[in-house]
Length: 303
Image 1 (cartoon, one colour):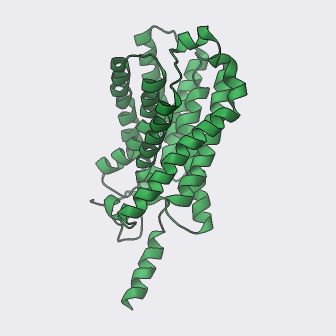
Image 2 (cartoon, helix red, strand yellow):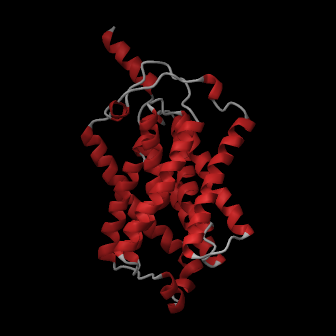
């Protein structure tokens, strides 16, 4: 994978004001897209909707900014690396889940997947352009070379463990927060309004485990550049993985104003707890050693 070392220091966001206007650009685009979506479905703009649209775009920018700053690759590679976690965690994962636990038609879900890919791509183009990579000490390994520093068999068993625990945590925290949202799932009118049909366990468990695998795969761009096996590095990775989960997934529920506030709070707390647990799990099992540690090991071997 080609690495782009031509970083223009003058365009680097180094001040609070520099970050703020860049975040605002992403936020305004997200608001514009949400208003376009509102026009298509016939909803009128509200102050709350405008604030939440801007907030969602700003959250996307702030969550993905640290990743963008650590991706020293060509522009297209950086855009793809930003798009994969954003698109899966914020959009596609929910649509896949809806294919199993709602009565929404497959055609509608596929159409939604295509439609939501458009703003996700544009947001990632903006972030890749507005937040250039920080300079790094060469040589910088390519994306696949970086991930290849862990043997394939080791990746397989680690991903499998995380995927299974992903499903377990979904069930565990769902039961924990069940009392907060049980009244909604026991309300036939609400279930009909949201087209929700809870799947049986023999479908839910494989589906959630499969989504766990895809969740890990969506984080490969993050794992390639957020590295380190010492405690501060692992703590940072866990915190950042948690931030990704909260900002790209849990926030989506809080921002859905068509749902009752009690449901949004219950589901939001559930997903936030999921994000914390997943962050710790991914940091413990999947984060790679720091590049300088591997260089030092190689130097010792050659000495």
